[in-house]
Structure formats: structure tokens, C-alpha cells
Picture 1 (cartoon, rainbow, N blue to C red):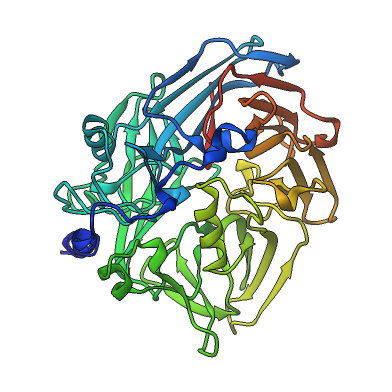
Picture 2: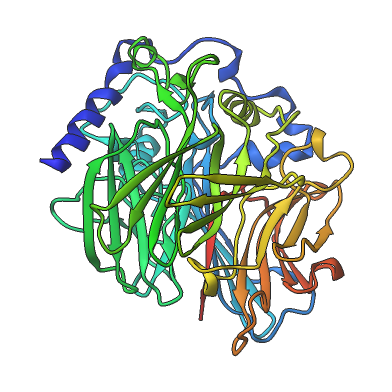
Amino acid sequence: MQRRHFLSAGAAALVTPLALPAYAAGPAWQRPASFGDHAALQTMRGLQGQDLACDSASIEGQLPEGLRGTLYRNGPALFERAGQRYQHWFDGDGLVQAWRFDGTGSVSHRGRFVRTAKFQAEQAAGEFLLPAFGTAIRAKRPMRGPDDINVANTSVLPLPDRLLALWEGGSAYALDRDTLATRGPVRWSDELAGMPFSAHPKIEPDGTVWNFGTGMGKMVLYHLSATGELKRHAVFDMPPCAMVHDFVVTQRYLAFLLPPLTLDMDAVRAGGSFAGAMRWQAPGQARSTRVLVIDKADFERRRVFETPAEMVFHFANAWDDGDLLTLDYVRTPEAPVGEQRLRSIVHGDFRGSPSSQPALLRLNLRNGQHRSELGRDALEFPRVDPRVVGQRHRVVFYPAALGRDSAQRFGHDSVLRLDRDSGRRDAFTFGPDAVIEEHVFVPKPGGTREGEGWLVGAGHDLRWRASFASVFDAEHLSDGPLAVARLPYAVPHAFHGAFAAA
């Protein structure tokens, strides 16, 4: 019954754009004329469905001998077919990448599109066949549920026997860890088949995996073993919120920030996209962000608190200390400001990209009293040492916009280490000719100190229109990268990733 509620209600909502003409008219559907002229736009041009391969990247500097494993990345990489282009960055089909560090000074790269049902059908047809999150398209194929439009384009979860490509609206897709070949959607159980599995699972130091999914007023919780076996789950009514992208775990709790974001179903029925129908609660009405706190030991023990309205996409970490819950996250611009900028990016307009700041929320679970702290840097995609997930942490790493002209450019140009205890900042800025993606922390073998390891991530050289991977000593970012591995081609800008040690 719970699964049927998710899938039947979701399918009914998805089918509403059927009355539209095949595509909206207007210049927004055309490829920006400047794509061939502006180097920064190459990161958003997209691919046409082809795979990528480089057996030996060009290495500058010295790769650490102890760095052995694979940096997996995922992001939208196909934005147009038959001369028609998606209207939202989040709509592109997912390309999973594998940057392999063999420990001998060599780095290889592979990129393969996730062969979702949607991708395979549209590749064969050579045109868009189904609606997307931010683009209203008349369906030319039957739609039975969210997995029919699953693009598997947001993040990855490495498990011992497979790699999962994640998209928050539907099932995880299993891939081969070595070849990146698509195996198919994951069924955690018959009851959970086709239910959403979000793009931001949390992995505790012992390997325990927690995740959630939301849709049509319901939330599903997942508790998995370190090998990816389902141990527990629950489905229940959640407080109203049109989109929940991320969450955190602590020693005792799961915690969610639910902004006052609603879905205007009349706008969807009139032909709008889901992204375009999201509404920030009108000024003058009672607005708040709800904090949903769930006991990890008993999913039935749930509490809701209220804090001032704010928008959040990504968390760094969280911990609880007695009755005090501390959430470390990035505060983003309110909708619809952030939404409009995400739409502009996919069409080549990078001016005024969203500016997000680090934030802390301290919440007293006995009386609901709370206190917030907001940082000053423009940054996103926070990461912590995986050995402190769910526990009190000291260090957070971010890609940041620290250059003088960063407000006029797309994305981030720096990597930043922030010490939450001392306030000390350590950063390296690549300069105006680079765009930096999320960097993940990789512990050094045998290291025990928090933050003792490497910071590994990807970026784009705008001069050469090519992508690279960079490796830093995580305790000395300002010294610059230890090594840079350069590709002979450009890869579209990815969202999230994970490092799997060899």
C-alpha cells in the first residue's frame, strides 16, 4: 500500500504535462550562440551520449604513493537533442566518471552515461520523449512512475560489489565498479521497488549507510549494512516541503531541514515544470524552516522544531551532545532566486551565480531554542573527513569563490579548509582560468588525526577547454596541488562523487 501510494500519485502528477505542445516555443530552446566562443561555456555544452576514455592522463607534479583507488564523479552531461535544449541544469542525463589512481604515478579516466530506461529510449529515438524536472515536455512514452524519467545524474555510492548512480526522485541504478556498465535499477525489497532513494546517503565510520526519499507528502527511510543489504526501513507522512535534497546523521539522530517550499499543482497541470512550479511561501505569511529529528533506534520517535526560513541544499556534518544538536551546512539563496540562476546557467548566462555561505545551527532538543551562525565566504559542496561522519568534527573542506572577479564568473575557483574550532582558514586559488568542482577528503593510510589526508577533486581549465583532477595535502592547501592530472578533453561539470580506496 505504501509503495502504491508513492508510485501512483507520482505518476499522476508526472502525466499532467500531456496537454502541452511537444515543446515550448521561444529562444530558450536554442543553443546559445556564444557556446563556441566563450571558453567557460564548454563545461555546460554537454555530450551527445558518447563514452569517454583516457588511459594515461598527463601528470604535473608528484602523485602521493599512498593514494590508491578511484574517484567516482556523477553529473548531468546531455542537455540537448535534435537542436532542442533542456531549460534546467538538473535535467541532463547522468554521466558517471572514474578517475583511477594506481599508486605508481599513473591516472586513467573513464566516463559512461548511465543507461537508464529514459536514456536508452531517447538515444534510440534521437529526441526528448519525456518530461524532466525543470523542463515541461509532452510525454511520448507511457509513464508509470518516477523511474520513467530517472536520469541518475547527481551522486554515487560505492558498495563492495557495485557502484550506485543516484538521483533523488527515483531508484538507484547499479553499475559495474570497474567498467561502469549499467546493471539496472536497484530493488531493496519488493515493497520498496521504484521508491525514491536520495542522492546524499550518509556513511558512518563503520560503513553503516543511511538514506531517505521523499514524494507526494511521504518520506521513506533506509538503514543499510556496509555491504548494501537492507536492515530496516519506514514510510510515513512528512511535514509539507516540495523538495528535500540532503540530510545528516548524528550518533543518535537523523535530521532534516525542511524549507517553506511548496509545489503549485495548478501550475503543473497548466503545463509548467516541477521546478517552475515550486513556490517560496509568500511574504506576509508565517514562514519557517522545519527541523525534523528522527531517532535512529526507533523511526517512530520523530520531533519537529521551527527555525527562521532559509534554504539549504547541502550539509557538511552534524553531531549531538546531550540535548544539543549541531548542524553544519551551507545556506543558499531563497527560491525563486536560486532557481532562476540554475536555469540561466544551462543556457550560458553565468552572471550572478548563486552565492552560498557556511552556517551552523545549534538546536536545544528539550525546549526548541536555537542559535544560528553564518559565515562570510561564498562556497558550496562541503565535505568532512569520513572518519568523523555523525560525530563532532573540526575541519570542513569546500570549493569556494575567493577570486576578485568570482561574482561575475561561473562556479568556484578555490579550495578552502575551514577549522570550525579556531576559525583558521587555509585556501588555494587557481585563478580566473579554472572552474573547480567538489573535492573529497581521502584519509592517508595509517593516519589517525582528523584532516590528515589528501583532498582530491576535479576541475576545468578554461584556457585549454579540458578537464583535470587535482590532489592536495589536505593540511597544507595554500602550498598548492601536489599533482594535477590533465585530460585531452573536456567533461561536463559534475555535481558529487566519492573516493573508493583500492
